[in-house]
Image 1 (cartoon, one colour):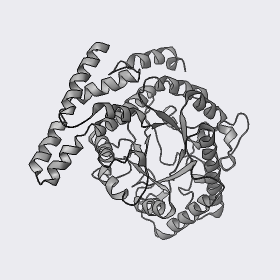
Image 2: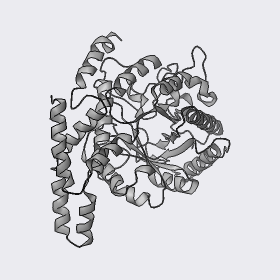
Image 3: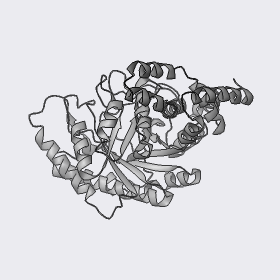
Image 4: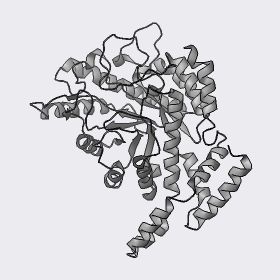
Amino acid sequence: MPSEKQISSAYRLARAAYADYGVDTEAALAKALSIPISLHCWQADDVRGLETPKEGLDSGGIMATGGYPGRARNGDEMRADLDVVLKLLPGRQRLNLHAFYAETGAKVVDRDALEPEHFSRWLAWAKERHVGLDFNPTYFAHLMATSGFTLSSPDKAVRRFWIDHGKACRRIAEHFSKKLGSPCVHNHWIPDGAKDAPADRWAPRARLVESFDTIFADKSVSRKHCVDAVEGKLFGLGSEDYVVGSQEFYSSYAQSRGLVLCLDLGHYHPTESVADKVSALMQFHPRILLHTSRPVRWDSDHVVILDDPVRSLFLEIARGAAWDRVFVALDFFDASINRLAAYVIGARATRQAILLGLLDPSKPLGQAEAAGRGHERLALMEQAKALPWGAVWDELCARADVPVRSNWLATVARHERDTLSKR
């Protein structure tokens, strides 16, 4: 592995190479380290939550596959694992919680009655580590979701339960924000849909509008503190034919209600470019939430890697100078490999994509395009792929005082040997 001197020397050469294309690597490093990435708590325990288990309860189309040993079994183990992960990641991090990670002790508290106190241990952990919290209502894996419909259900009692849950979660998100001094992104995703062609596609969507309008009508919750987002999907397990909350639905709803639209890389057809959607949607949406994930033939939420979709997404954000208009979060769950390693691989790949976007020679590319020199633009784009960004990444890790390259694997192996293997 490279020494500190070797990293510094390689970076000086890389800095000069990028300077030839008008790229300031120092500015890119500073910006790349400053952008927060919200880590999803549910990778640590395979999306099981901390509620009392209900045997045979459907997960709502969310399934972590694999049986790698060492899954976190409670909140303390999850936080201990996250402590290890945080020490291996450069830049600013946040933590994204789902509502069914409430810790209610011996008392059973249903989701429509959740209060900030039920997340006090998460809040204390975040405050001590200077980590912001984001939040999500959990509209799945519950007896009130067994029909496959929640906020769009034809059953008024079911809708009322989930509306009350959404309202409770908004109050919790606001509480997090006030206590931590940072806005809490509060993302709503529901599993509602049909496996096969429904006779009526209209009524569920009308009911969903009504339900969400009721949730967001609570003006006592400050939108400055609780930043509500809505997340669409192409299809899911059990909703292969019809998804109530589709991309078109949520894009229109978010724009009309002043909410944040969430784009998840795994929620589209494999041939769609999410990166291309950014410049179109952000003409009308002031802010968007980005979920980095990796579909493999379907929305299977594989661990994020530095693939073309991830690179292209953040390249578009960089070229649009839209960093202050996006929230970045992870969303994947893989139970087939070491879960801490999954966190580190996915979070580092996301920050690498951010750095690569910031290192793009956008100025000469734009000048060539404006002058009608398409051949020059294309040649520069190809040359940019060969620039020594890896040396800049090593420098970023060194400045953040985290392991460079794959040196972090030793820490993960030690934690697996000393802690995970004993669970």
